[in-house]
View 1 (tube, rainbow, N blue to C red):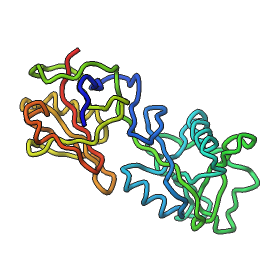
View 2 (cartoon, rainbow, N blue to C red):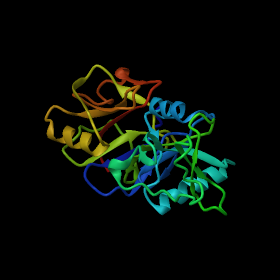
View 3 (cartoon, helix red, strand yellow):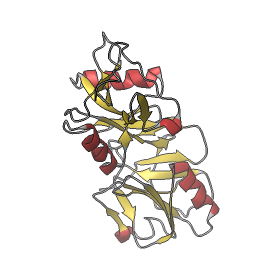
Length: 256
């Protein structure tokens, strides 16, 4: 149920002041993090991440590495899979998010073995070891950490249907009283759909499209994000604004 008076403002083209994550995720550094619900092999964990619309996490800085380590320690986990492996070329480690920056891998010098088959990476959470990376057999059953981009929010404000949108750079995503995003989409009003890399790019497309009144950010089963531009808002057609059992968020222009 949508709670009256709760909304989130999203700035189209600006540095993100804060990040909002779905229920069960932890925010940090413009992203959302969580662990897989149960231990699994590295490959099975990777699929579990994709099914959640996420990727296996890879630390890109000492600060992110420490954030991930602290999460694991708080959850009582001694280690967790990250998105790095040496399966393709022995001794050459590749990571899931390398296009976003150089991975920060704090290897234990005595544990980087190239002559065995320990080809998948874990981070050890024991604070004494400081979040070091270790190699493990990929078939071991270990919990994985995965990551997805969070929604950039500016500040909470009133949610209302008593207006007609005007051209501005603020869009709101409905949330409940606990500031958790609602998995809700506006159906039967889509005028254009395309794959998107970020929420701001979808916002910009809606601003540039004269007929666009709102948009859905929808994740496919493969974890691909789609932007759906719509010619109506939830206020125009409340019957078509529906809760869904997959990741989908609907945004429309807001007023202060």
